[in-house]
Image (cartoon, rainbow, N blue to C red; front, side, top):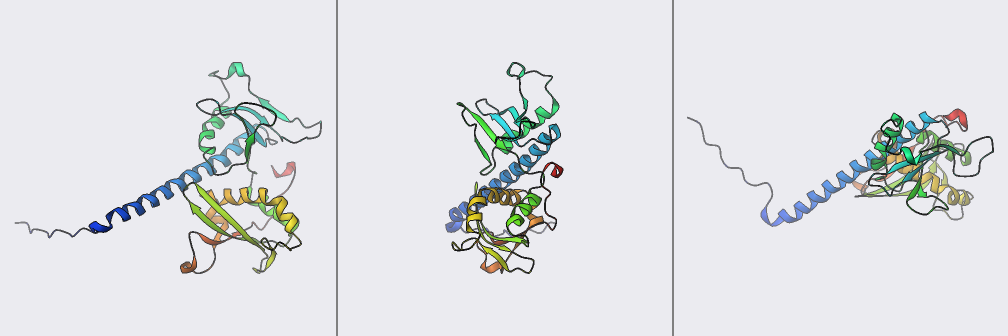
Length: 259
């Protein structure tokens, strides 16, 4: 004869259920947004790797967003003026062959990554200059984002070892506030919020390059644990709180040899 088991009391009391359901929903929404951002960051980096297999000089993709699915129109070396011996446009799609089933496999791979990539937060994308319609110019990430960031920072601060910043993350939005450039001993080399600092003009001209790299490293599921270290006691942390972005020990090479 089996012994009857006592009924368990509910773990969530009735009066608190709506509030806790809201908390659970918001937490799930946040996790879904983080997963989407991680997928976009991974797809973005994979996109750059495939494009550079086509050409090591690939720096930008021209995308047509007027179709149900974004389509690749052209691959560019650089949208800025370049020497005459370096072609600006590396590849352009023949509109007559847009639905050709014999298209290159690399093209199919690139286009399969575009929908996920374009879901990313604040990508370096802009409307094609001087063109009407839905043309989008998407800048590709560096072959090694962390090494390129380290090289960029060390041009102005040769002894830089880390960036001290705070991370405030909400669904579909991540805000970064950079505070200091640190040396290997943890001492500030440059205070970003000090408007009288000698390097303030440098930061004003370079934050649009630094912030996207920091954002990419944070959102990428493999790079975040490699390069970010929480700072301070957990009880004093709000959201993700203070983080140290530890720069790679070896600076990135510049020029064609970097690819």
